[in-house]
Image 1: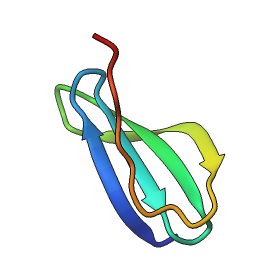
Image 2: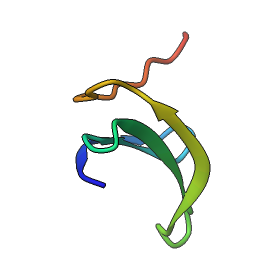
Image 3: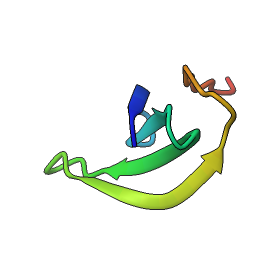
Length: 58
């Protein structure tokens, strides 16, 4: 994998990672106490991803 972009999601403690190869977005759960990253198993195929942004409903 070749991570190209990432976004730390502070509200729900997730890290989103955009991988240039193999064209995926994956997520990791961030442990608040230790900072340890744990893969969530969620992965989505995205053609040529370059950026990730999280929007929240108000």
